[in-house]
Each structure stands twice: as structure tokens, then as C-alpha cells.
Length: 525
Image (cartoon, rainbow, N blue to C red; front, side, top):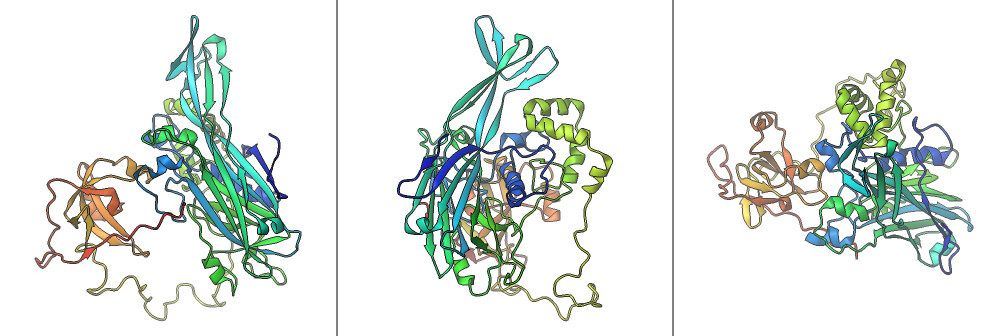
């Protein structure tokens, strides 16, 4: 499409189809290639989940990271509390990062990347027309399944930093509707791939904090309308930006770590507010003369929390779409699929077929490399030569401040929490109501009843309620091991009848009640 020139600005906004990642995995190359390899892993995280079959329950709850949906759909039940993780559905992302500009002619390039959902409909040929079907076998023995796919999209903004310091830049970042038709062999039918239009915009602002220090803000919003906010999530996804993330590079600029900021910039780093995404450094750190290792030439702001300078392991032969899993485990499990299961996976999605082809033809030496690798034999930082790593510590480790082993500390077995005005603690019976955008595994438990095993506090003073599901045949075993499902108080409702919390071992009922923390204010205005 032609360049969209922002009014009164030297910025250029270009919407393009994102390039497909190489089939045999990332290869060494310049900064853009190395960082794009990590970004591609983020882009396709959760695109298709093992065992890669349409019939798998996991593949009915897909796309859990960086999903920007129309605001009316997201806020049907009220505003979503913002955090740096993009595992909750939202209608916007906000990235703030620090950069040093060494020259007046510094330029910043921002690439907003996401997936646009595409519905693949198989249609059977009939006299006089076509009929939509769920599945169709053609004469060549291939099975074709109706399923949802996705197309990579990218909007690139290039702007002179001096102009951005003077005025805000806003550009459209959506994707057009479309439809393509593929004829099947021997006139058996056709496959129709259709996409709804995605409406989005990106806003860039910059603020000078010092002589050469600038805070850059990138805000990406889904601006689409949702006529019916009650539609199920799989329908709302057709108007969504999926796996949304941002790559930022530039000329004559260096980006500063927010995880480990240089001396003197801790306060400025703490002042950066990131919502539903978090920026980390990309590329090689500055370690030469004058470099402190805490700055780099690029930033990747992802909905998945990453360390500075993330890299795709060179042993990884290609994407398995479960990037949070271990390649070796997924590869071995894929090898164990039956022929019938592999046939269904191939019919589900072309990317699943690529995974099966790669696994079925993987050389033994490539598989062996997946078992693990030693990156360095150098001593850990802070060790002195000749010091045994197994040497006894000087004293017992100090307990963190949020955990004190006395009456004032948390007590999961006796603490309670208010749920819809009812005190809930160990032994209480509740019904599970996970919020939209919760973990996929939690969504499978919606509506089920459970018993509370304990009320826990995390390091941020949040409240998590541990439960065992009533109709889980392994509930007793899970209790014995201490393995529970965890839900926030606002994802529970008291079940009727609801007994009082279980008494403490000495027979006294617990008295301390925990009030859930006040939700964050809505920063999305």
C-alpha cells in the first residue's frame, strides 16, 4: 500500500505483510534478523498447540498472549487491571522505554507486529454451487478441515526524534478485510479463506528527560467497534490484533535497560509505565570503551516477559509454537503421534504439517543437540578461583520481608478472604468463574465447583485462592502432593451450601480476614 504521511511530521508509516520466518529456523545475521527470530517466536507462540490437531481441546482455546480486542468486548464486565504481562485480553498496549540520542539527526523506527485471524472454510462442490462442510476428503487421499488460521501483519513507523519531541505522531495500524479461494483437486470443492477488517492505531510520543536522555512511548490500540460485546471469544478474535508486540530500532540512538538500568538512571527507568507488554534490550550490549553493558541498539517489547538480550537457541531446528515448552519434549511427543493423529494434524493447518515433516525427517545428530548444551565453563560472576561451588554458606539465607514465620505472617491454612461478602477459607466450597482472558487451562474449569485448600499471598501482596476441583478423580492425590489450581477472589463465587472455613488444628476458628487489593485504576483512558 502507499505510504501514509503523517501531517506536519517527517514520519513515514507503512503497513506491510510481515515476512514468514524461515522454514529451517533462524540463521545468524545482522541485528534485525537475530531480533526478528525472537520476535517471530513471540508472534507464533500459541498459534497452534501440541498435539497440533483441531480436535485437541487446547486448540479450541488458542492465542493467549498480546491479544488486543475491541474495547467494548474487553470491558463488558468492567475495565481490566493493567500489568506488564500480556496474558490477559486488553484493547491496548503501552510501551515506555529510555533511549540516549547522541546526535540531533537521530531517527527512531517502530515496527508493530501482530497476527490477523483468518477463517478457513472447506466447501463441497454440489450441482449448482458449494456447501460449507466441516471436513472433506479429496480423490488424492488428502483430508481438508475447516479451521482458523492467521496472517502476519506489520506497521512500520520511521520518525525523526527531533520531530517526535515536538509533536505526537498517530498512524493507522490495522489490516484490510480479504478473501481468497483455493480449488481442490478433481473439482471436489474449494477452500475459502476470509478475514474481517482489523481497526488499529499506533501513537508515538517522546519526552526529553535530560541532555541526551529521552523517554519514548508507543501506544497501540484496537479501535474497532464490537456491535455485540456478548459474542464468544473465538468470534471476537476475528477483529483482534493477536500476539501483538513492538520492535524499536534507530539511528544514532542507544536504548537503556529497564531491568538493570545504569547508575543514575534507576529513577527514570522506574518512571516508565508499561501495560500489557514489557520492553527488553535486543542486540549486543555496549561493552566496549565507555559501555556498561546496560544499553543496546534495539528494544523488543513483548507480551511475554523476557530477559534483556533474548536469543533463540541455536540448537532449535524450527518453531514448535509452544515456545514456553522444551523442544526436545515436544519433538519426542510429536514422534509418538499415531498415523491417524498425524493425518489429522496435517489437515488442521499447514504449519502443523511443516512440524511433522521436520520431526519425521530429523537427523539423529539434530535430535541429540536438543538434549541440552553448555554455554560456558567460566566461573559464575562473583566466584573466586579455587572456591568450591559446593562450599557451605556462611549462614542461613535471610527470609524475604514478605514472609515472616510468626503470628503476623501469612497463614494459608487459616487466612480467609471476602468473596461476594462471604468469608471464604480452607474447606469452603466455591464455584469457579475465571475471567475472560484467563489461562486456557482455567477456562476449562469454568462453572465447576471446588473446595478451598488455602488462601495465599504473593510477593506483590496479591491474593490467590488454592482449590481442588470437586469432580477431579485425582483431587485427593493432588491434595497430598500440594498441587492446586489457583484463582483470584474475583474469579470465585460462594457455592450453596457453603460451610464455614475449616477450624485450625487447635480447634479455634480462624479470625483474620483478607480483603482483596483494590484494582488498579483504568489507565486506558
